[in-house]
Structures are given as structure tokens and as C-alpha cells.
Image 1 (cartoon, rainbow, N blue to C red):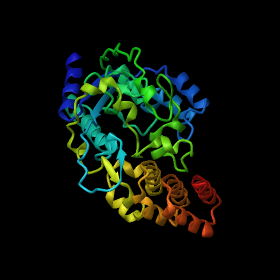
Image 2: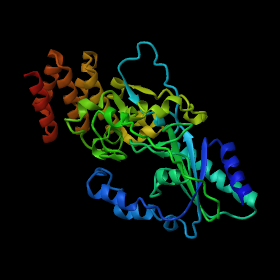
Image 3: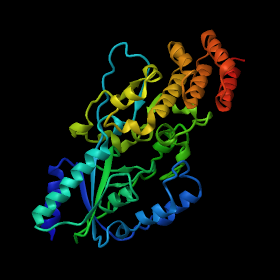
Image 4: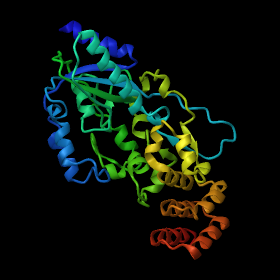
Length: 374
């Protein structure tokens, strides 16, 4: 059977995956820890993350009847940042994984090809469940069991060759395969990621308070950002890489080679232009990109927060216009940003908006922003 495992790995690498390993489809023991985090409120803000989902993900047999093995793969998203054009304005950062095409689509297509190719090579249809970070499968647990890497204290999977800049996918299959040996490496005494997190979201090694994580705040969060956390978000427009950027394992991480993840001009976004973007422009600009996950209102909210943190008065005219946006979410965060930047022009814009604002939540944001001037 060893030749079958070798053939699977070789084929996966030929298809463009950077990492591949094999794990058994036995029940995962992580269920109790995941349920505890859920009950402690550390997964707040993710309504789809339920006890039923956790239990299903811990039992591969519930995802595919007759499951015997898991083929775990990884693709690097370690792409170099775009060179910002001269005079490109005020810009916000985008997490590395979102700088190319949406990895869900790229990897799912590749995994389907993997299953179809293996079926042809083995001369029989393979029953399979394909997963790329959008279902109940425990992708990091499967990758650890398959020997791809180990759990970092920032909860990311750390791999010897590609660091934590890896996107994971799995094929749960009815093939009986020889599993790989899990890695025995660990982060040791290193706590750089915990110390570097601006919002203190890493509350214990490997444990994230979701509601404090900048990635959650700028992507999954559909409402206002908590005011006390806004200054800590910095200039992130979508996601956050801070805990990975400081990780020593990533110093030697191999670069991404997948063309779909290469430059699309998305490593940073010009922020003031986002404030006037229409939905049609949003759909066109970010077609095929993971950035669409934030929705237009969420992305504009993020831009307002980033502009407030950058503190450049050049953003005041665009933020003043955003005070009259159709979305209360945008108006409230534009008010906050103007309060942070300050100045006579910002004060005049806030005063004018106060006179006509009907939304109670936005009214409170306007009052709080005006307090900044006092």
C-alpha cells in the first residue's frame, strides 16, 4: 500500500499543492476543548459555530459514511506585497491570504481534480468529502495528525517549510491508507505572537478570544467595532497578519508559487476611494477575491477606522461625505474617525451631520466624536 500513498502525495504535489500528508479518519479528541471555548464565549460573533458543528467536525464518519483516511493538503499564501504606486494616497493593509484569488475556489477545484485523478489511477470511484475551511471539518487538527505541522500559540498551524502562511484543505475518503506520523515540534517557550497581538486576543497559548481578534473585527463582524478596540486595529483594512509576522518560524518560510495567489494589486487598498465605492464597483473590483466576505459596508467601516488611526487630515473631506452615507454603520465610524483626526474642518462636518442625523446609534457616535474636541 505504501506505493499508493506515495502516488497520492506525488500527484497532489504535481497539482500544485505545497504540502500533503495522510491521517486516519478516527474521531478527533479536540471536541471537549472546542466546546469549552464555545461555552466560555470565546467564539462569540460566529453564529454558525455551534455545538452540533463541533461534534460533527470531530467525527469524520459523520461527514462521509465509511471514512477511513484523510488526505490533508496545504498551499502557501506567502506572497510579496505589491509596490504601492507613487502618490497612491492613504492605504490600508490586507492579510496575505486575501491578496490573490479566493483560496476556497482555487483549492476546491484542485481537490476535485485530485479525487477524479486518483479514481482514474486506481481504477475505481473514490468516495470523498472535500473541505476547504467552510464546513465542520477540523482542518488544523487533521493537518497536525497528518504530520504537516504543529499548533502555534496563535492557533495557526506551523509548518517547517512554509511557516504559518498555509491554506488548508482535506479530502475525507473511503481509502484505507497508511497514516503519516504527527510532528513532535512545538513553539517551546516562545510567546512573541501573544505579546505582539494589539488587542490581546490570544488569551492563552492556542486560545483566541474571537471578539477581540482584528481578523474577526474586520471580516466576520457585521456590526460596529467596539470603540475601545478601534485604535488598536491600526491600518488593517481586511484581516490581520501581526501574530504571523512576528513568528520566528516564518523567517525562513518558502514563498508562494501558485499563480492564482500572486499579485492582484490587493496587498493594500486606497482607503478614501473605498468611502465612495458603489456596490456595483465593489462587486467588480473584488470579484473572485476573499475580500468580498467583508461586504461593502464592512469594508468601508474598516476604511473609516484605518483612516482615523492614520490621523491624516487629508482624509477629512472623504470622511465628511461619508457622514451622509446610506449605511448607519458607515456614518458612525466616519464620525469616530473625524473625532480622532480633529481640526476645524472635521468639527464643522460633525456639527452639520448632528443637525440632521436620525439614527440613535449614529447620533451617539457623533456626540462621542464631538467630545474628542473638548
